[in-house]
Image 1 (cartoon, rainbow, N blue to C red):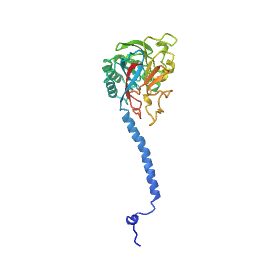
Image 2 (image 1 turned 60 degrees about the horizontal axis):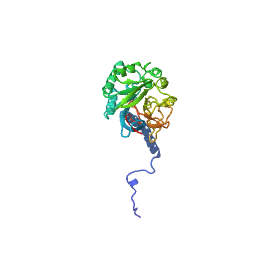
Image 3 (image 1 turned 180 degrees about the horizontal axis):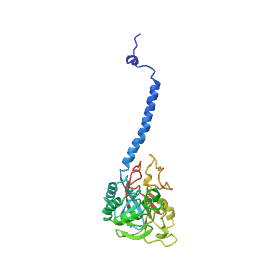
Image 4 (image 1 turned 30 degrees about the vertical axis):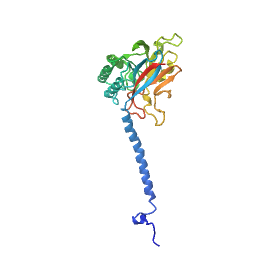
Length: 309
């Protein structure tokens, strides 16, 4: 009886069953290629993301402002001038932030990594001056800016080089200091403390303890490392601006888990937090990074709009 359905396998010369050894070998090769491609593609993306700057805009309630009043503050951190982060990248980030016409600028430390040359520091001061000459610009220091933490890791033994660079750039540096400023006529106490890891954070020298009368003006606090909030808790401040974390630099996809964030309190790594009932902490992801890589955590400059409570 004639077969109704032709045997295409025979007509094309295929042999049945398939060679299972060849199939297993193909699968093994596919898995090896996939296991190699994942880190290669991830590495390429991490390098590209490190240059993919974000401009974050956040509204923060702030004591003392009347309804309808607002202040625009540019918050920048962790420039990390180094072989991984160029002056062009830093200037581009500053230009993006200043294009929003902020009323004042605050830079919360880690201007450098390692030990840049005098020529590089001079070039950085000139870049900063382009922008600090437009609006009041204030800063505090970070752990990479020289001192007891930085020196054993290839950095400067003191922060004098960075301090001189900022002085040339006309950036007002505060190290355990408090000053009274006005932004658009609004009075503010501005405090800048030294770096926690460098063992230079001394709030007693510059802050009002809660056992004393509260300041009339609201207090903005510049502090590089958000972990310092615990030793700063007994003092009056309304808004703390921090960096240091790079937003974690590597965030596990589909989670908020930042396994490499250099802080003890992993609940405060990036963004705005209401803390201790009546205060706010803002942690920016920063402009630069270490090793030229970021994953699922873009660099940023932050525009903070302070509004009436």
